[in-house]
Image 1 (tube, rainbow, N blue to C red):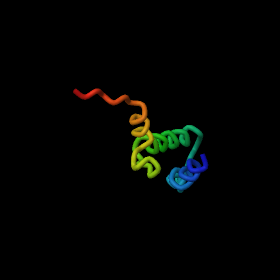
Image 2 (cartoon, helix red, strand yellow):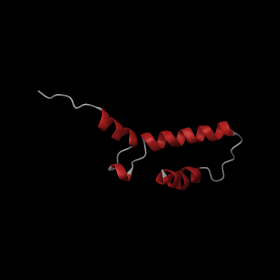
Image 3 (cartoon, rainbow, N blue to C red):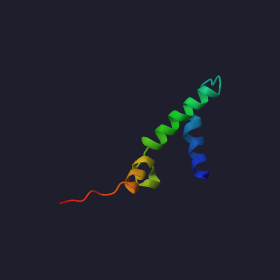
Image 4 (tube, rainbow, N blue to C red):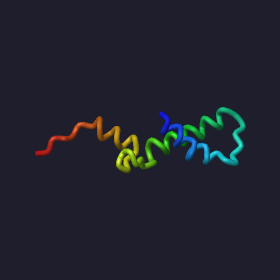
Length: 67
């Protein structure tokens, strides 16, 4: 959890520097964009360069039988 907060501080909140947030909807939209990027597009060193989604698929998809 601490790592997640650190990454958010280092990457997500840095993206908001200088951005005027005029309400919770705007902040929520930016947060959703960040979560999408973080989970589906951003390679993670702790996952060997995979995204969390790629790792999830790897762990939950059964290998197909080969002939």
